[in-house]
Amino acid sequence: MKNSLMHLPKAELHLHIEGTLEPELILELAARNGITLPFPSLEALREQYEFSDLQSFLNLYYANMAVLITEADFADMTRAYLRRAKECGVRHAEIMFDPQAHLARGIALETVVDGIHSALSSSEAEFGISTGLIAAFLRDETEDSALAVLEELLAIDAPIIGIGLDSAEVGNPPSKFIRLFQRARDAGLRLVAHAGEEGPASYVVDALDLLGVERIDHGIRSVEDPALVARLVAEQIPLTVCPLSNVRLRAVDTLAEHPLPHMLAAGMNVSVNSDDPAYFGGYAGTNFEQLEDVFGWGAAAALTLAGNSVRSSFASQERKNELL
Ligand code: HPA
Ligand code: ZN
Image (cartoon, rainbow, N blue to C red; front, side):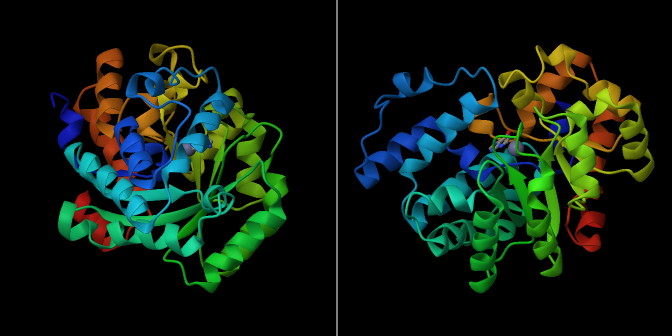
């Protein structure tokens, strides 16, 4: 790949493993599991990938999960992601999954966790990528549902390093999940949450103050609040920005209008991530390439973005030192 950013060791911090399910793999798993999809051909499926907002994407994202049935399905999906991530210089990946979405379909938590974990556990040897697994909770479900699933994850000693908050943001503010994040903190887990993707800057403030998150996923609407920007700069709170996702879900009109250059220039701790790469037009490398095409960035921005991703990860200091 042409991009200078491609060769820098970097961390991917905002990645939904279910969002790496490529159309080809969806059809393969559907055939393997005897599932009839509403869009039975590649062409018919690909036609669904035009989104008007977050919810229109989530509808397809949840529908396509129907093909994930066995441990091997989750392992194959995860291994396919790691293979692609390696090609674009990702050396550490913190991967979210949506346990509630699978439980709702009648898939056992162990099937999901063991499948993903079997791919992650050989990732360093197979792909040179160290990993961490984050259980993301659906903010359009109740806090009691999230708490029950967190307890189940703890009871089976699931190999998770942290929890996150995702799905439909507007109308589901951080204040809904105070007890969930308190419980996770008490269990020694790291804390992240989506905020300020479609929701207002105040959700970013509340994720920090009410939930105590260490990192904000997206956070682009923070730029609407100068006091929040000043705080994010002063405290160097990491924001895992996903430029192609924001364009495809119409959070911004075009990549050229994306606030990332302004955020970098302001001294915010931003990194570049792919979110749901099978749905949004590309993996980490494509995000970097398109940013370089549109903004003409050179080595300095590349080093800052890659360095931010590694420094903002939950990897050990020893691993960070290897990658910086
Ligand atoms: N935003 C919120 N929830 C999600 C996303 C996203 O981009 N991807 C998967 N779940
Ligand atoms: Zn996301």
